[in-house]
Length: 168
Image (cartoon, rainbow, N blue to C red; front, side, top):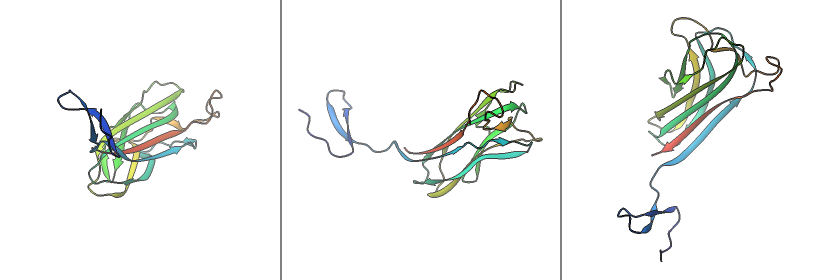
């Protein structure tokens, strides 16, 4: 018969693989999740840099692990290439996203993912997702968050950015 565990313990098999035991969880937990959803339709102009999202994440632990996820919904092609960047606490992480250039006026799904080391201090840190051009101007699509005005088969669309902080 297995003795009772205490609060915040989990049941696992011992290192010898001979019996179950209770163990204290010592890390690997989510500390904070911050997200932003933007659904306003925006007609984009050609720029060298454009910030789609920029908001504060209240970092809970110094040097934690940070995962940033982005999904943008666009319509109508504009440019074959732009860099998709994440900026966290004023540190640039370039080239963290992708989209498909198809020369069609259809919906375009742009996704980005970054897994980085958090700042060396706690508190509010700005998380930004942007496109940038190294040698000119442009956008990955002409309309951000298209609506039925862009295609009558659509309803309002929304783009999302999520920041998840981990303790490992």
